Length: 318
Image 1 (tube, rainbow, N blue to C red):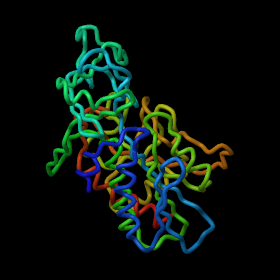
Image 2: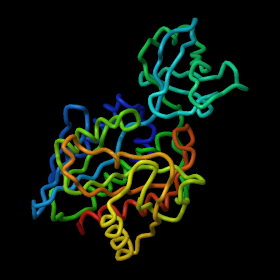
Image 3: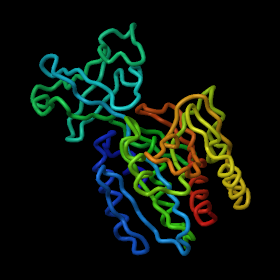
Image 4: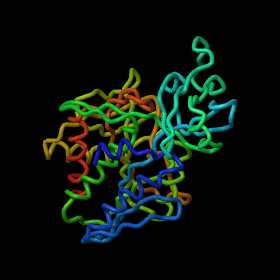
């Protein structure tokens, strides 16, 4: 399932292929109910033994990508990013549309590249017949297959399909739950975070757990191979102190390898509150990732496996 998820094309705002793929798996599970809301979020609801609390655990399904703006000349198009993709991560990369048309993005001036100067980038289809199938509004994503080894995975869309995989594993392994639990696969995180805002407004949870990739760097405490991340804070979001301590205790109790995350850049759906903000507790769970928002992101499989252990342990203990 992990390879299938990562290789699907489902750019922010165009998540239907992944949502439908997961829905068809979840609708076969008898101890919960799967449904899709008005903005395209997928929810799997499991009734708890005690309905005093509502727990929302979510991971976004969308990936960063590109959208065609206009035709420049025969077979060549201007484009914009959907999500945060630096131009040098797009330059000389092969991309593919949701309809299967492939091309290459290149920079008109490779020596004058700036992070978000998409005026300098061109999508080249290089085929007069194929280019007839390309129009304004078409979406493209990196053409990159998932490479797996014992220790690591390399590919596109690890942010955040790996978290979706971990959430599916949690559904399979959570056992009997005390609280009403909403397993949610949210849309549009990479662009406007609309999906999770709708989820929190409709569900009004008491506890919200957000599972996401987190970029490794000098301003982030996370390291490959040191375990699943329990987020203290990132560039904009702060987990509830009690929730962090609780997650730590569960990890220790269950012999789960973990690391605490403090970062000074990036953020996740942790920062989104519903319109009324009923004051739910927030907890971020992170999977360390290198080269995010590129064709060749990297994660350590040990960290992924520890995340798969932590999520059901948390849910069964809340």
